[in-house]
Amino acid sequence: MRFLVVFAFLILSGCAQTVDIEIKKFKFLTPDITINVGDTVRWHNIEKRQYHNVWFEQLGENEPDYFFPGESYSKTFEQVGEFPYRCGPHPKMIGIIKVK
Ligand SMILES: [Cu+2]
Image (spheres, helix red, strand yellow):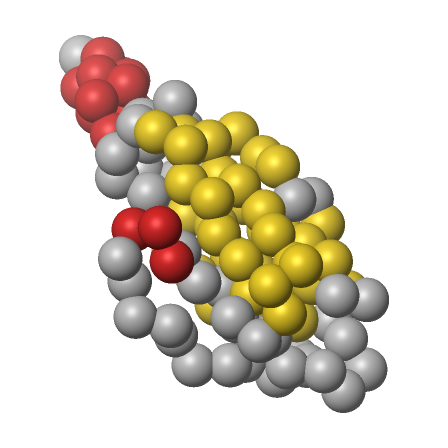
């Protein structure tokens, strides 16, 4: 019985995961990922000295603070959809999070 309760909970909660993206040499690695609703994406700046940010400009968000080598930035996705983002100071750095 307890097993069934835990099992039902895991299905309902969707077993949210954290997915990691590295930022290196002015690129998001990987730039195009698909996750499930409730998952969190965590971007890690692994540059030697360059700061970046992760800006979901098309969602109408304000540009977030820069984060520096050794730091990370996380965002949880609670809705289905496709969410393009960019790095504020480096407009050629783009990525997309697809949430299913
Ligand atoms: Cu950048």
